[in-house]
Length: 256
Image (cartoon, rainbow, N blue to C red; front, side, top):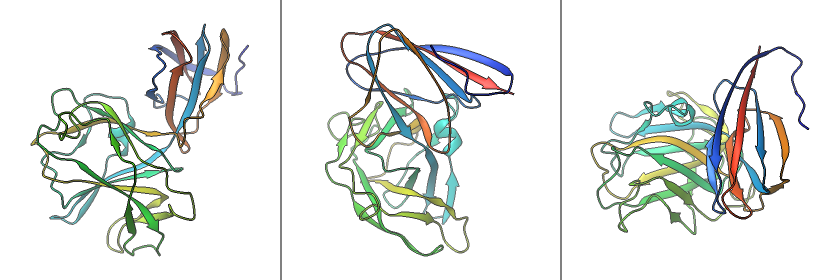
């Protein structure tokens, strides 16, 4: 039986369901809610997504940084991360609270990339003093689930994964920026650029970091689980069924 983890009065509750399969699925935490309650009649598996602390577009021609974290995590289809005509000289920086195995990307069904291009993905391999340029190194073992063709990246929803660099000794936690532009908080940075200029309209609706391995927790059937949510550490959840296609009931709870 689940119990409340807050001593303040209940303010709001909303619910939804997720149809589970043995393949992983991803769900962002609902903004503004402080607890979540989950129930499934069958055994299922769960992992937490590291928090997406920053989603920053760098425009090389204008020398500007634009933050799109809210658009990437607000679960609103009308808002998005715009990669319209993104050239190979621009970058999308993703900052995680913990090392991630990849990112799940929800691509807009109408505004997607439809030209031959792949993604160049690098991780921060050297931490520097604030205001200095970071050192980035190519990730290994890339697998682009957004690719269609092959050769058209960001054309469909999917998971882009890589081999996990070792925390601390290889993947360094650092700030991002210059002494004249805003500095973004210390986190584990990934830098993404396309190999060629993308289509005129490319919208990323959701960006969800992937847990660092596949050793997801086992959740017992017929048990209600309830947790508080810390958005500085967790962006959302990864679900999977151990067998079949059961339904997961999800209730979001907000306290005063």
